Image (spheres, rainbow, N blue to C red):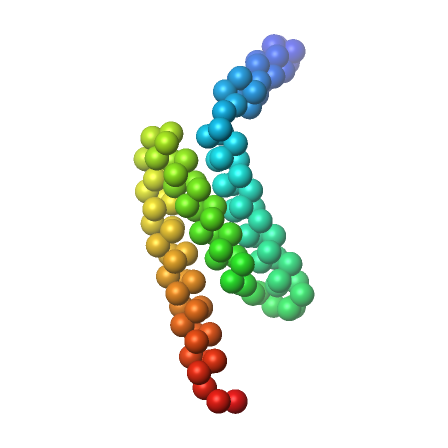
Length: 111
C-alpha cells in the first residue's frame, strides 16, 4: 500500500510539473515567486528596523505577483484566482498611492 502510494504520488507530480509544463505554468510559478519575495523583503526590513515594517518594495512585488497571477487566472479560466487577485490588485494600487501621497506631502514641506 505504501509503495503504491509512493508510485501514485510520483506519477501525480510528474503529470503536474513535467508532462503539463508549458509557458503558463512557468508564468504562474514566477508570479508565485514574486509573492514569496514580498514576504522576504518585509521580514528582512522588519528585522533590520526591529519593528514591523512594510516597505514600498513589498507593494511593488505584490502588484507584480498579483497582476501576473490575475493574467494566469484569466488564461486558465480560474474564477477564484480572477476574483481574488482582481480585488487584491485594487488594494495594492491604493496602498502605493497612499505611500506616494504621503511622500509628496513630506517632500513639499520645509524641514
